[in-house]
Length: 117
Length: 229
Length: 83
Image (tube, rainbow over all chains, first blue to last red; front, side, top):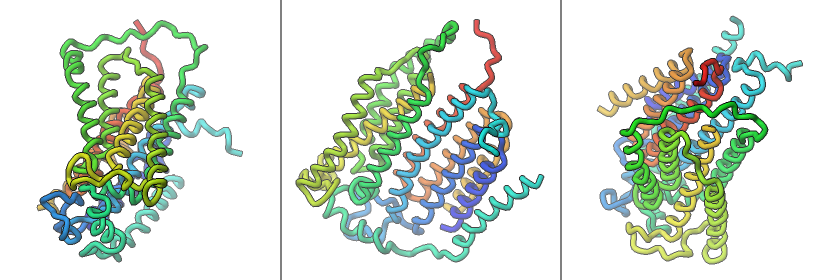
């Protein structure tokens, strides 16, 4: 539905803006996590059909007529995978931040200029 | 100042790309394409009540195998980066103030129920909303609860490693059994499909989801323990 | 009715995201990130996706916030004295 697509796009925009302008390393990782959440809401809200119910074919929905009664199940399956991979990548990024801090004692990204020429 | 303006322009550019989708897209009125075929054919072909579970485990089973691999790589990366170095001298262990009696008793009472709830979620993944990933996350939340209340609680690393490796290897083994005894890799029909809607139905889907639930639960607990230090 | 609910939840999600990017206190920013996941989880329930809602509530609002708080604890300047 278009309303939720609009809100999800705004959340993604906020996350990407935070990724580009913040200087604290942990804030950067947090903004990336928020952008990922916005993208996942976008994907699920594309599969929504007005007036229909969840794709679980128990006795309330019935097997024979289910095609006219459930929302699209494929985006939900893809978002399930995306959420778990998102948290794994966040944990790995944060452990890199912890090791960088242990070496240089600073969380400001302007102090890490070793690879700039 | 100029950097902020460029950052704002880039963010607005991303939003503008997506806004085109907002304007020109019409919400569908009916299922079509692959989704229609999955919902129509799934109860007779695979026998699971939850269509999303059937898609994640069998129709898109290879993606789930890739995701379990990515989770394993991330957990290994965290363990390698944050392993405690032996030569660092411990200058007096931090004395944590012990938690109150209320909190300790409450944790002793609640944490077995949380782990049992997580096991219930991944055993019933094919019958109601739930499944391996949700159950594994609930189990890891139970372990996090124990870490927060008892600061000296340590997990048994040997048992954790064995459980995770066995679950991962058995997942691939079940896939290969599907290749040998049924129609393809990770096909669930080499076990009988059973009566629709009971616990022992849908072939190998409960077996696969149990293994995934155990693996995800132990991996997330391992990540938490490495971060907690 | 669902429209009003979704508008409120959407405004909550975007508001929490803006707070998470702007707050100076890192612990408060991590909690705001958890609030974004919480609102997204309720949105998933209204959009008829119970599997995804359960996953987002357990992983996003629980474990992800805990991971951020552990990372903040380990990167704080150690100024406090131990007894």
